[in-house]
Length: 143
Ligand code: AMP
Image (cartoon, rainbow, N blue to C red; front, side, top):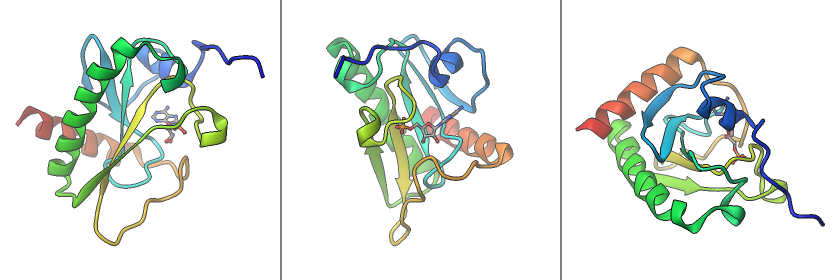
């Protein structure tokens, strides 16, 4: 099979270019962090490096260290913001693994004892809930 290449028309590239909105939690030169619109659990957040790559397989290794420093900060913040018992960090590569958006991103999902994850790319959350949750995570990141 021919190697898949990065396509800048993907939805996260559009968010990065400001062409479509997102419930933004954090942004700097390296990453953007925003709420997943179809959360698998309360506070499901995405950490997205600005550097273009489809996924982990074609990413510049130099991107990965800084990316995971941000993933750790966001994991700590969501745990605090939602008083979670744990945090799931997950990342998919190519359709066979479940990847649906082809710009590298890491899912950070607060977890609560006894509460299973909802389906991946399931139901849309209400914008007001996403906005409120983004605010809680912003506050936790700042504290
Ligand atoms: P993946 O399977 O890892 O590629 O997951 C892509 C994720 O992006 C899914 O969890 C979707 O719910 C989420 N998603 C899709 N479109 C948007 C969007 N416009 N804003 C935020 N999250 C999105």
